[in-house]
Image 1: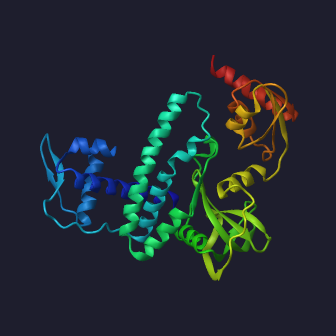
Image 2 (image 1 turned 120 degrees about the vertical axis):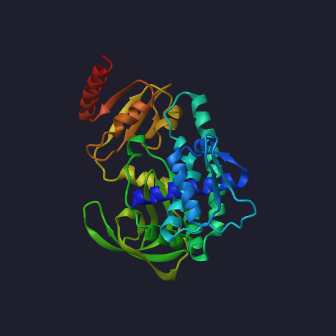
Image 3 (image 1 turned 135 degrees about the horizontal axis):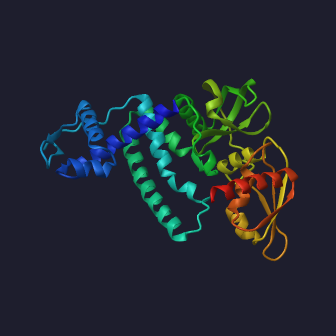
Length: 351
């Protein structure tokens, strides 16, 4: 489903962009229009055919300088999408509006490059926000309510690049129903499959959705366990069912929902404690790896870093490398051995 959602979002978003360009420009040469959309001429022709199927009068001019334009004076019908396409389009545009979120944890040291990347992401995010508003405005009332809830109830989070390629299948109905339950402060029930494979019935007070790279989480107060929990939406088995019971939002034990999800993933399951001395000021190290570790002063231009990763996790090595300073591992001895192995491997790679 995730692959279908991504493909639908890309195609529908591109169709909207194509329509916007055609409406704002009398005539577009085909090569220039394809370049603006970042697609091949063949893909452009398919997108034009898609608009024609929806009733948009796109006329083509053949030849070396051939191109496209909308027929003059034609009445344009509203964009027609089905339920899954509407949700996919909303998800794609919402993620694009959160595009700058991933830059905060960047390990780049080239400030000019980082600033340029942030500027580009800001531009894309602003354009996506405008597109999302336009799309939401023309959706049927039933779909508009779901799209608005999804946009309003989603918070961005970031993680290390190693996890960014992960993808999880999500039922669009579960996603949008969870968003509505968050917005309306309505209790919900669902069957949940834990990482161990155990399935349990949960009743929760939904708070926010968090998108962490390519995974979606529901942050909610678990009425069975009487504590806050984060639930991976791809592990929700079957429908997520609103109960009709409203509730008053409780105080979340974190700065925001995104921080709550990150903290929960780092702290569970507990494996072993890592301690290392890094030869750099605590403030600088905290800025680079503070989301994964506790950083305390240990002298002038020196700090103590502690981490509690899952068992057999490799990310402490990555985090220590991202500190961009000399370091010495205090514990455990197994981590020191891992560093020796990785160090030898990297040395061989440079030969």
